[in-house]
Image (cartoon, rainbow, N blue to C red; front, top):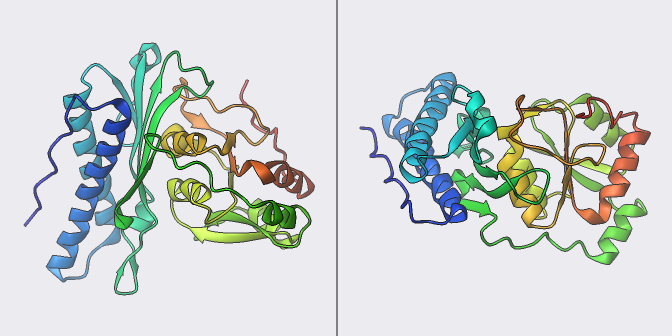
Length: 290
């Protein structure tokens, strides 16, 4: 029997609080779908669960936003885009389920936990070029939400630890796709000085830099704005460096929501990583935005 959907957040919440509540609510929806699979006790089709997760989370988030912020525009992976958002002063950028593969995959007797829900608000007039006002990354399987509401600050990289990375005495830990790491990442690791830490969704990779699991996450194959907006908002609030590969600012709510590349790194080792990328033959200026 399907579980009842979470109630919609109170419209009186601040934008940051609303982002957290939206991530939590969508997380409940997704956990409910997994619980239904567990309760059925039968073999399930991962593709069907992936599709159900995308659809159910999108449906709840769209309705919750219409309830709480009816005048705002929305850019979502799972909804048709509208040029109206380009003239809007406020645009919610959401990914209802980041990491569909991980969401629908078992891990031993349980489920994988490296998928996420992304909720960010782009607002015209925000001082930074990216325009991100608030953000929340829900980790439903871990019953956690990282957000800009109460950022903990970037995990302090001890001087001795940073010096060890810079001197090559310990590898720089780099988040990487567990199933299809790009060639440049594996080439980088093969040169030494970099240790790849495999994990799932883009959101999980970025917040893993925030919590200190890894030192950096680099993506050069292109992503959409909803893949990174909320994680970048959270990482920026925590004091991390979040830019294009060449160091130019990220920009959101563009006509074409495709972002060619992403660089998220602890500031203490950012220059070291960029130099390593260049030495490995990565053209950090390729595909730079005009």
